[in-house]
Length: 193
Image 1: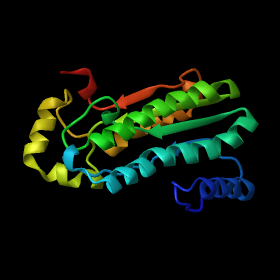
Image 2: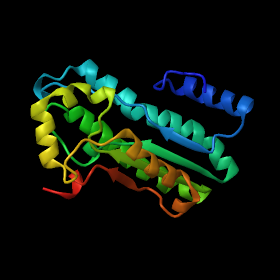
Image 3: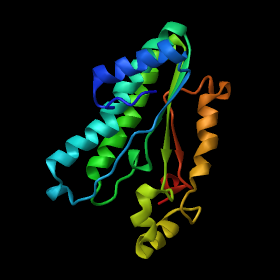
Image 4: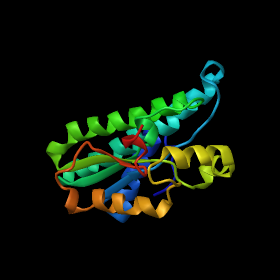
């Protein structure tokens, strides 16, 4: 699909409409836009907060709505939003990120509530701590890695390929009666004190 600014509602809708017209139906949407900015909450820059809101929340709304309009007309579709372990938990210096991912979890529930009657399933995957380029600084920090390994029952960072099964499940008919669910793929971190 051509890249439209994910926070540009009209641009996203035009890009989705154009893609559907030229290439055919979008049957599965994985909303995977996201960014992070770390700072103490009392010093968190207002412009960084607005950027987090636009990237992490408005993009999910804009793309989800644009694609759902077509899915509703067809009476079927799968929407999978990418939330985070921070949908349920918080850590120092990332409160705005936590707020945005909490919003993604609740927006997912709202999507399911409004669109399930039209044949759509709307769920979210909430990854825990994964060894990705976005987390490179944390992975490289021995103190943080030690904390994470002790805090996570699985005792390690997640591997990106461990998210694939959750996505395939939520995209398949095996999850046809799963709707509005946030699936934590987190090595047990949300299950343990």
